[in-house]
Length: 110
Image (cartoon, rainbow, N blue to C red; front, side, top):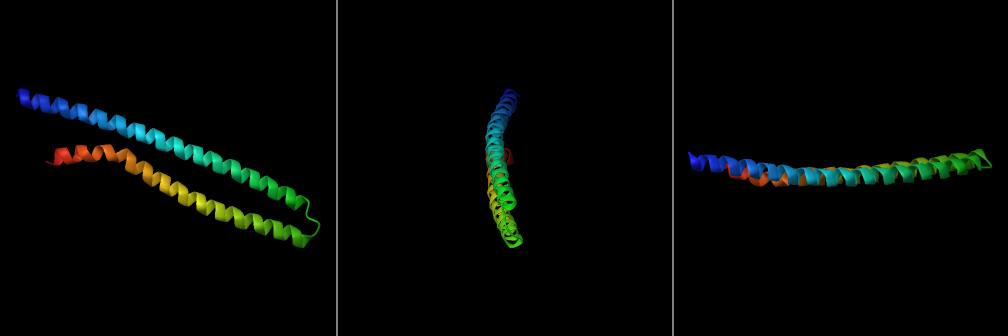
């Protein structure tokens, strides 16, 4: 009976430690993603402002279309690159958050 109680207490302690590690990894990952999104938003705003200034300064319709097309192309490419990068960050976040629980699951499966 005492042995079982000690096992339950140890399991509880191990689970709390795993949860704390997971929350730490989760916090760090979310912070990294938030910083990345803020940087991307700032960069996209600056590029949009620069494109608007070029568009206003365009002397002809052809030049305005060229400026707009260049902006749309670079915006799309930037978005795809950012989405790919964020996908990797989210995958890393999930891996790190659940890594501490892998050993717990292995222990209970025995």
